[in-house]
Length: 412
Image (cartoon, rainbow, N blue to C red; front, side, top):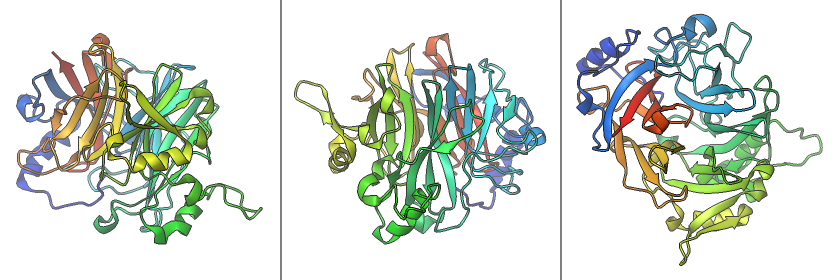
């Protein structure tokens, strides 16, 4: 989720001609070797835009969503609807300008991705997509609020996000906190779940302003803070992707900082999803090959000191996960920042051990040189075909245009 606009090279102009013209034609359709580098994958192809004039439904004309990033799915099985959470959103994809909203929410019942995703509406007034929880857009305070994943539990939708301090390079790894909002009325209204706050303690001098931000939706008339650094610090879970473990627990994949470290794991019983102290955190495998879980904030503090408690130790960003029935395994997908690109790892159990990373989309895609533009690799079990042999991945890019696309991946 880089925000700087660089001069476009000759190679970038070539890619822009392919990527920025709209329609179904994608970049490098005839040169798949530049996309996938793993022998377990049969094919990888650019499929379609999710938003903008080139999408199956023109989201710019209909809801003023010209360019955005991410696209985390929240499937509500109660009403059979998919809610797709996008990040920073603008009118103009070419230069990230006009009607900046920190996040928007697309709504669809289209689960046939063979021709892309057709959105039926966006949360808003019907003309302009609005932010679910707007960032303050103040650099070095709160630049924005970005979604990191969502889940529906017992008819309630939970939408996790992070509050970002700054996009400037010297401050890029610092977060404010990770938080959560919920909707009990099918996405019509959203409210903070105040107890679900994981604060970034890495810059002690910012403690008071981080607490102020984390408590900003709380009535402070009684003079007390609901969320404090002492009770809710949680560096490794400032970015949370939740997933149903299908065993009575919601599991959360956690990342700390911003593209700085690996992935840790937590879980909580369905009934306790709104209680911070009910969460327990993975602290490695015991001698009998069983996972060790430590509960509450005290448990989290212990886990964060244990480098052996990572389920993935790469320099990760924008992680997602799903159970792939075709493989009979859990699949974690993420970007290795500065590394191979979008990769996946698989494991028999959600806590691992995970396989070596398999490259799905090379970091240089869609460019022919070493220009890095892509990020995020977002998957969901509802976005699959042939029991998971074919799955669709949401890919973001910040140049030569700023937008999210679908990649179609077919396994061998």
